[in-house]
Image 1 (spheres, rainbow over the protein chains, first blue to last red):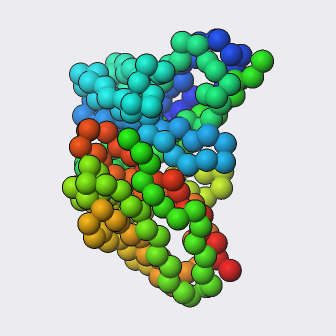
Image 2 (cartoon, helix red, strand yellow; image 1 turned 180 degrees about the vertical axis):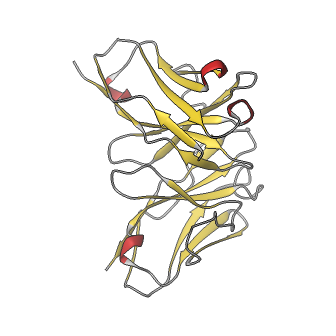
Length: 118
Length: 110
């Protein structure tokens, strides 16, 4: 079974750094792009960016370029989403998604809730 | 890039059919057949229900169907059931080699 399992919920203070993870299993990790999607409380889905674990080729939405860093460690089949200095407005649910054979996303991780509050 | 445009809400009675529109531009929906749809129940992760405009993944009910005309894609739910009450999002690949989602549509079963 193809699965994406994300790290647990986080509570951090503004200005702190944070790295959340997404581990893939049940498929060839290196040959599928993995993306990240933000969902702010009560709001819709926003595509943040995507990485190809095989060579770490990465693309970002203009809205998120420079705000986050997406990386991958293919030795442990895991991708990461990182912030250097969190803001309260980064509080949201974050999903990792696998780009399937075409330009769609399946499956989705279970989500990681990030709360940034002083 | 701007989000694709979806109606905020659509409602229907059990057994009826409803259609959700998803309007983009000539840089996304209008130029690619890479439109997908996702269903999200409260507190759950989204789930793929339509890919490549009109294809259903294995296990998805055939009551869900997709289509596209010009810059607008559509999702139709026929024989509406209580379990279909959820949020629905469209997505499209873009000419910038990125993806964009719609703002989401809340479906209510009356």
